[in-house]
Image (cartoon, rainbow, N blue to C red; front, side):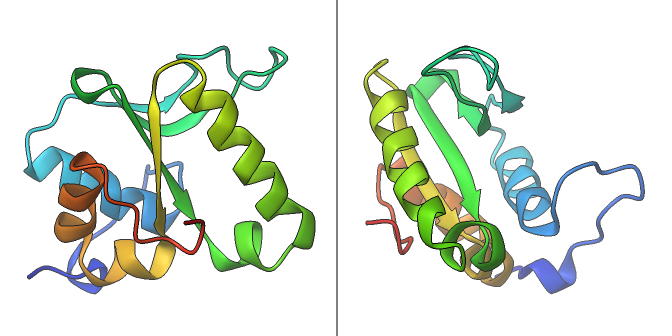
Length: 123
């Protein structure tokens, strides 16, 4: 098992550390994906969203949830639930991976996400 602590984040990485761990796992698993995908319109389009990761072969989106941005802010959980409904209304399944899970065992949680299993606090 490789934890996030064992993974070196490149200096030019523009996302969060937990996002990089998921990126790393998807790459190791040789999964076709887009990072920061605006496949359903992006933030500028009403009802649109940016997926942290879009896996077109699975019609699956993966968003990484941090404690600070997604759980510690009361209204954000509501926004994330609405986001899930909007994304899933397009036929894309949206799975959330909590930052501590991405850090502890990124391969396992990405494999679970691909199976449609969501271990996040959003379930």
